[in-house]
Length: 312
Image (cartoon, helix red, strand yellow):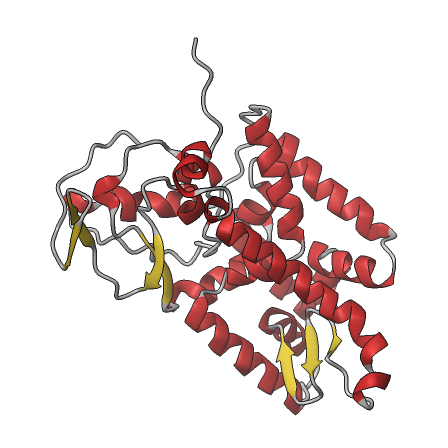
């Protein structure tokens, strides 16, 4: 029996390793860079005449002493406990919401959240060692988890979720010394590796659920505008953390469904773009139209492609 090619191998051969990992590399630079700014800022204060590059944490921060950024999920919980938010916190929430409404709410999950690096590692190992199956947790569970994070502040008068939030624990651990953070991250890693594929981010995390709701109307989208070139290699499905979002845009031509991935659950991670040897996907807007390729040379916009097989 012929050995199955590794996911993305065709893309590496067709585009080169850098292009086949372009968006993954940029995401890692973003995630590590954001953490690095928090880490080095205290050491730069004296050199910048007392100005902090970024001060605070991922829940609430001040950049260059003038730009407030506040996590809307955290502020909402605080308000439910009876806290009256500071003006800067409200301004920070508005800025964050406008940003994620433009670029997609779950961009937070794939481009900012440090836990994503842990869950991506678990997902890669599952593919590498052929680990299949696991607990079947409904993806709607994360919305129940989100509801719970909003009910608990009302019932207890405290932001209970922050005692268990892996993102907050990871950040505090990286900046101030891991402690319990190590155990929480290890638990998330083992859960995704051995119990449920994409179990934490895709099925349980209330933060991802919150940003999925924010991102439903966002402008930046992944577009399968060359979907007629799809050869059903399934690599995009293998790497996508939210597989259900791909099928309508990729295989919906015969049903009149456009090539834009409109689901709020899409993280705009760009991995489907990376691993596709046929360059079926790209980043575009929610108003993008399909490009029909004739013999791989000519492209015209606004035309329908031929029907696709339902193999995927």
